Image (cartoon, rainbow, N blue to C red; front, top):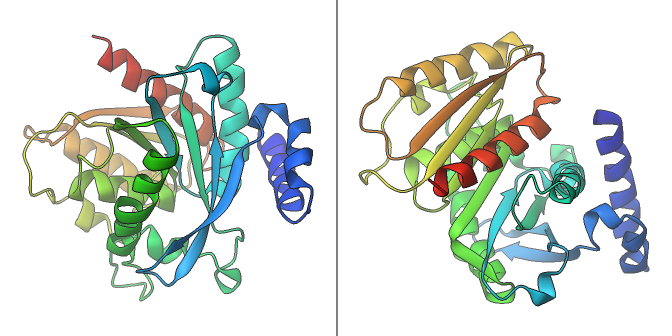
Length: 275
């Protein structure tokens, strides 16, 4: 899975820099020839690369569709969008729109600001703490744009984040739990600011939101230990703003867990909604 995801990322970057990328994408049918565009975040004074995968047969679907937003989309979009296609072949997942949010780079000096955008404040890292601004970009710019342009159901928004992306999923679930219906935090990296996430941060009461949090049993100790502490703490809280499911992903490390978290989280959302 990791080898395939790296191959997809390399091809994706090559195609985005090619004047004929829209034709090239057709050879990767698992991505279903996604829309790719840039969207500016005025409050951050920079732009994000947005990738949108519509389900096969989207043109014939009249009802609004659930929509899954992928953080770290430069990696997670090609990996999980193609995986979604495989799952859809077997009827294992419902039809949905998938939106990747990408920096187009891995290094901070090249424009990757995930270390700020996805995090709450931490005393040991001065650049942490940009999650409120990134959340505002999603709420005020990206979500309205997607819901204007596509048949996207605002009542069935979902968000997926891995590692620091998982920290942001918890941040938004704990501060604005109604912004997304479904939240998937895969191996959330809470090693620098766990205390922040052990607080009840939401100003509202119980919502209809769902929160799926998973931790790979072979994750690095610095990530595994605080993730387990978070899960144990919130399992004991009686007045949670969302319905919570926590899962240990046996045998998975920090990065291999992402596809399993994606599949189990999405299936749990829709199994729960159908009851």
